Image (cartoon, rainbow, N blue to C red; front, side):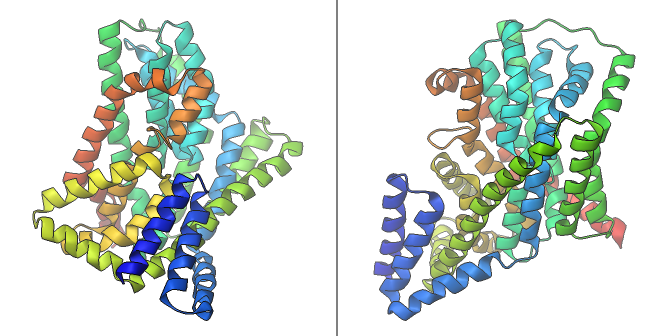
Length: 433
């Protein structure tokens, strides 16, 4: 058994260091391990497991939410949300920082993509903040970190992936569980932004009025309705999360093509092709990770890891801290979706033994890995933010420190106060009874 585990770990690590795509790393490592376990015929199990891994009804929601996100991203939603956020919080000292965070929270939840939030919101907010005298590195830092909040606030593709891997977790419950933690992270980033702006003297107050707030709110309502429609369809029992994702595509298409008219009919084939490429990457990751999960289960890796962690300490606080540290390290070099696929089956048994609800652990896992989107060497959001702001990562990193402190503080609150994750799902369940 030790030999097979070494083959799995070493082959995966070597391929990863060679910059081989993560899905290929997972698939090849699993194949080599199965080959070491048995004969060539045994390797057919890999194909079977990969096929079974993507034959999941909840996973059908992913391509629909991806299409919806692309339509929203190109349909003029970002500008309307920025105008509304500016009217609501732009009057504060350092208000553009608050506007940036609030807009990223709203747009990220609507599009379901942190990368789309950085490029869409950052494309307008970073140059605007530059013109108002804010430091470019600060602007990139706040945009990169704030964009990740949309992965906690539903709808979120990575939540669907976690629900499928965890097995017994409801997508609807997970969606509701992410609302308060997402808001908490956003507030933490706003507090950090306010402290930095006050210290550096960034930004004077911008005038606003009730009329402006109402006007921009009316313009932003059609975009915000997407979240309400999706959640109402799911929680109201009208349809499943997968069917609600199809509703979101229809609504996004009507809004971006028919109402706002910022997406041309001629652009739809390109958007569909981009959506297909994104979906293909996710599905390949799911397929290969399913095969790796089978290999790990066959070699009792989750059980052995669980036993090893519990041997270190039987204190729940210490175990949660240890797992958070591991995930923070993992997030620096592994993208979010493969990390969820690989580490959910490893750590979920540990969580079960110390009495952590799987919904609560899902939010901990996602909130933790969101931080990795802002850290090199993977750091997708940080890379995009630096590209938009036209600065180097080395220049942006010092300005990231206050926001890292803020999101880690929020992560600790989410980890050790289950109420943030479980209150809303429990409330919805109690109302439905």
